[in-house]
Amino acid sequence: MTRAPSTTLAVTASENVKQFDNGALAIEALKNGQVDCVVIDNEPAKNFVKANAGLKILETKYVEEEYAAAIAKENTELLNAVNKAMDELKADGTIDKIIKKYIPAE
Image: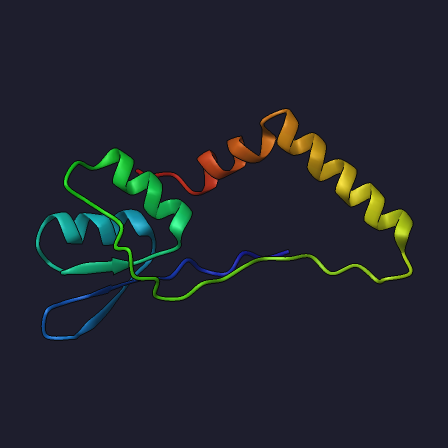
């Protein structure tokens, strides 16, 4: 499986949109005054705000997205196996570790 390139957008006061390869570069541009805001997913945004004093998440939602996996309705064996695995990954902290590794604030 290939990973889609990360896209983080930032906006300047003159409404120019700049694209960055990752959130960290966009946040640096924000901190350096090169852009006026950054549009990024909520989870990495929380990490960036936590790690960078003076940043905040606006109350206004730009877009709301949810992620899902599709399993054939009749394949209850697979559904049960996936649900069990997800419960185990949550319980042992693996999901939190993955988020920390792949959606870091720095």
